[in-house]
Image (tube, rainbow, N blue to C red; front, side, top):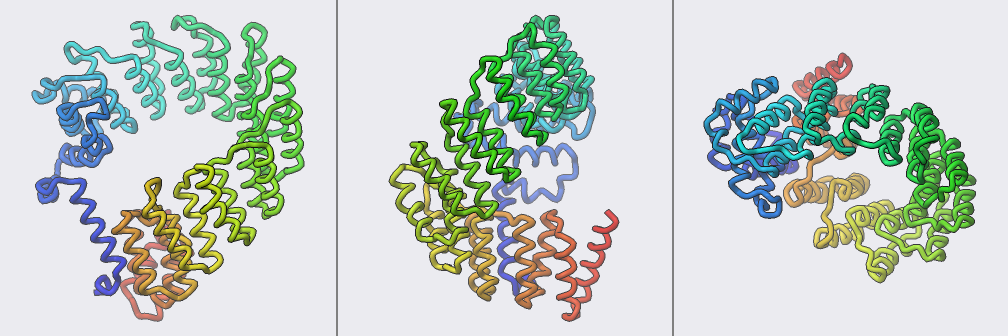
Length: 522
């Protein structure tokens, strides 16, 4: 009965039904309750997969409509959760599969579809290999190497690489994937050993391959080990600027920015010139530490070296100064960038609008949005509009916020997302407009823009409705939240429980208490 009183819940259910009809053909949808077999479930999954939805654009994907049909059939024929051998045998024994014309595009889409299911990916690939008249591309082998490595099937990955070695199709790209997956599995010594064995694959140990190894180790936060490897190799493999940039990124990633700063000097000692990426990486780390003295020192060093900061450098500093509430200093950075002749982009303007809004300079932010950006031909994106909406909501300028939302809805460049509505929802609770205004916003989110609420949105709504003495509606949102597999915070459960207890909603109280007990035990 409560469901009928709550327009939001009706919107959600209507949206769910529409979604089902979009994804499933009517005949399939009607027979859904009879779909007990795992293969039929896989078939339904195939219908709703990106590969199937792309069939409307098959001419652009390089695979014809017949190929898309074959893709759906093959996905449906793969037994769920079986070993790679069972997958292979199942496809071999199926008459429909034997008549399918295998193409490179089909193999690519199959591997992409099973990128998180190594058994199916390996079984399908073995079937493809055995298909008469078809020979997989080296790139397909590389994809499978990456899938096996990502799923920590290291032994199977090694077997596949040995097969590739016998076929003489191992490339530096293959080795890069192998080293990355070995390092990701914690086997960084084996990643180094793979580099040492490059000659057996017909590949050369040179600056490019050394950089791949160093980059792999640094990305896995094994910077000290990468440094040891480099010291051993640098006497017979010359480093280049990219080598040192790898270490700069690595040191910054493990929060040892002083070593990254020192790497700049080492870089110069080897005759390599630091670039804007080198400096900007270190500047970003100092910004995270709010160490702006070091930031300005590096900016001065950049100018002295004839290396001009780019828009990313300035945007990083602007955002960090704003975060530390140094608004005037942040706006001086924006002026410094303009005086340097550095052309602003959308991300810079998003940061500038946010800074102006936080500083209370609403009129200047509007000028940037309505005049400066169009004059320079800089296209706003969703974040730009969201910054404007948040600014107007913060200053209680409700109508102007809605005007920006309507402009975004009519924009050819972007559409609203959940964050677009977040400040508007907050404003509804702040102004007490929890009936007409809130219902209209939620209707637009769900039915007009097909947006799904996230944890933050549900939390805001439940807390706001509880404070507005609308705990019945808040409880229905709680149930909807759990149904969407979004786990509420314990604080949200506690607040809702305290609000509904005086309302004598005994079933709801029991439901929330059981859920809270489960949260504690798990």
